[in-house]
Amino acid sequence: MNNSIIERNILSYLQPANLQYNDLVERLMRLDEDAALLSESEGRLHITIVGGGALILQKIIARATHDIDAISVSPTLLYLLDKYDINTRVNTYVDSFPYNFESRLRKLPITGKKIDFYAVSLEDLVIAKLHSNRDTDIQDIESDAVRKNIDWGLLEKLALSKDEALASSFSKQRHSEFLHFYHEYVRKFRPCDR
Image 1 (cartoon, helix red, strand yellow):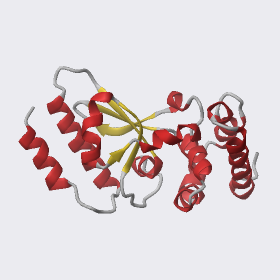
Image 2 (spheres, rainbow, N blue to C red; image 1 turned 180 degrees about the vertical axis):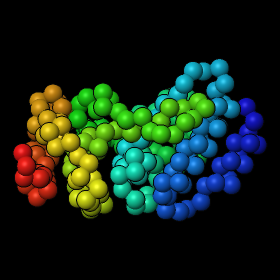
Image 3 (cartoon, rainbow, N blue to C red; image 1 turned 90 degrees about the horizontal axis):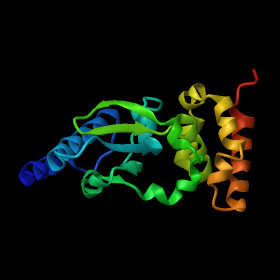
Image 4 (cartoon, rainbow, N blue to C red; image 1 turned 30 degrees about the horizontal axis):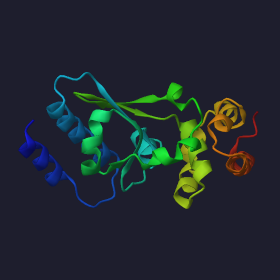
């Protein structure tokens, strides 16, 4: 392990900024470089990105973000996450994601030496953002780009199936609030061609 290379990579790159697509990719590639140095003998590692970063990395929205949210990370990477402003605090809100979200992961077009990069599906992100109901999250999912790319049938299945959003919800109250936001969203934005 060459700490001077790792520290140089981190110090030369990290700066307070609004991260756009190229910035996010560069940050993830630097993480991958450092992971390759730290864990030469271990197999492939993974990281699953959610939130605005996932939408940006899938080229669905073009806004900037301040950090990268990850819901699933190989344990070997945990040591490096803070240095790259990648947080796993979203795990606190895992009940915001439909129960089987892992089965719908999308591989991101980032080729790492050591890390495979994934994002949750657009429909799973919409469900999670409806759960949070924060202004930025609502703006994301109300954007034309998001609404045009949604598989509305899949979104409905994830929102209403007892095996998905309901199965992951920690309480009936929380699920009831989500359903209210979901039905409002569908009423306002789902195309009428169903």
